[in-house]
Image 1 (cartoon, helix red, strand yellow):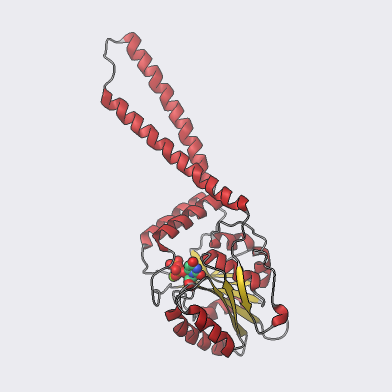
Image 2 (tube, rainbow, N blue to C red; image 1 turned 120 degrees about the horizontal axis):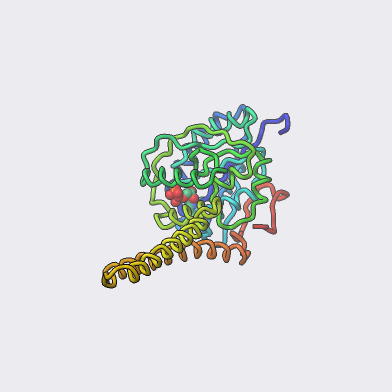
Length: 322
Ligand code: UDP
Ligand code: MG
């Protein structure tokens, strides 16, 4: 960091947030004013294929203000891809990652900044006692994930964080496409510091990620940070083989030593249904790994950039390595 005021760039992925943008920017401007004596803040919007007027609003914002940059993606690539694009385009002393739907409280930027200024390279907004949809499920997710992946830090956080430029540089070396962001941030960091921030309700509109997206993300988290699911398949297979052997011996013993009739239809059907269900489950678990491997070997870029609007043309990147 130079002796000048540090430059903090806020990276905001945008997918149809036109109603949230105006109040959000007003709040960010207040934060900017409060931090002005200590740091300069700029906004980097990654427009992830918005179709609701966000694009026009962002373009207007770019024309009116010189602390705004906009990267338009060719179409919608998803939250993780948009954030990764933001980190690729980032230029500053530290990056703040935050959602634009007003769930991440702009005022917490001050806490994040202060913790960063003390020398902490990665500071995350750990989730406080939030009242959010599906909270019990989230708790269960974190509990199981942290049991299965001891390398993950015990903090519960999403993406709201401040990353020192050195951490961003390391983060950009992680090339995988299936991204569980908190895990990757942890991987790129030597130490994670946290400040507790309550997550707010979304300002306008519905979550773009949805239940299906959350399940997908949860599976990605398990699979990319733990081999336990696929190991479970082998353990189940072994246990099944063991049980089948015991059952086989028992049947032979019954046949040889007792006059009992052949066991009934019901038990056979139950056993068949149980084992075929188990097999399907195991195939499913393996399939999840294969699907993600296929995704990785295709080596498609994570996102494609249509346009980069920047007042500092010298910093502009033309070729993106996603
Ligand atoms: N977002 C994005 N691309 C997407 C989905 C979401 O850039 O495909 C942005 C969205 O505009 C918001 C942030 O990512 O700024 C978080 O999205 P959302 O609130 O829908 O996710 P949730 O908070 O429900 O996890
Ligand atoms: Mg949200």
